[in-house]
Image (cartoon, rainbow, N blue to C red; front, side, top):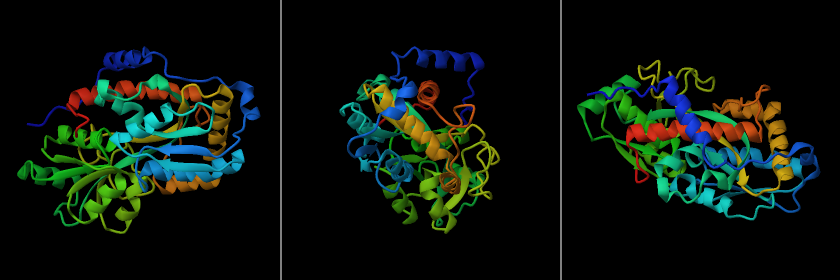
Length: 343
C-alpha cells in the first residue's frame, strides 16, 4: 500500500520552524565594516566532510582558487569524509577559531544529521558560525543501464514486481541523497535496500559497474556520467527542469511530486571566529558567486544561485536563518520516514 505523501500543514511548518529558531542560538557574527580590514596571515583550510569527486568537493575546489586569489593566501581543500559529513563538522568545530579554518557545509551535515543522529551527533548547531550559502543543486535519480527501466514510472513498477530485490545507493547515511531515496520509497510505496557509501565517488563506481541498480546523487558530481550514457537519468528532484539537462523530467512530472529535495552547499566556520573574519569571507563569497565565469560554471553543473538576499546573494544572517529552517524541515522528514543513521 502506498504511503501517503508528507505534506505538512501551514501550522505544522510554522511550528517546526519556531522550534528550530528556539535552538540555543546558531552561532553567528556581525562583521559590519570591519570585514575589509581582516586578512588571513597563512593558508586557509577548507574542510570537506566527504570524499573527493563528490559535489561537496567540487564546490569547494570551485571556490578555493578565486577565494585564495582574493585573500592573498592559498585556500587548501582538506577532505575529512565519514558519518554523513559529521567528521568534517567536528574537525571544524574543534579547530582554532582564528579565521583560518572553513567548512564546506551541506544539507546533511548542516541540517539532516541533527535529527538523524540525535544524541550521537558529535556537535550542536551553535558550535558552527554561518558565513554564507554558495549554491543549491538538484538531486538526480538514476539507474545502471543494465536495469530494464527508462522512466521513473517503470522503476516503480519494476520495484513493486521485485520487492526487496533492488538496492539504492547514496553517498552516506543521513545525506540528502539517502533522504531522497527514503522519500522515493515512501511516495511510491516500494521496497529497496539502501546501500550507503563513504562518498559519491565510490557509489558511482559501483553503479557504473552495475553492482547497485538504483542511486541518487547531487547533479554536479554525476552529470558527466549521465551525459555520456554510463548511467541513465530518470528524474531530477526540483520543481522545474534543470537547464543543464533539459530532457530529464522532474519527479513531479513523473508522478511523484512529494519527492522534492534541493541540496545546498555553503561556508561555515568555528563558532568563535572573529566577526571581522566572518564578514570578510562573506563579502568575498558574494563577489565570487556574482562573477560571470563562476555563474557559467555553476549553471553548467546544474546549480543555482543562493537567492537568500534581495540581490540573489547571501549573508551570514540569511544563511543562519536558512539553516534553522532546514533543520526543522528535515527533522520532520526523518521522523516521517523512520530513517536512521545506520542506513
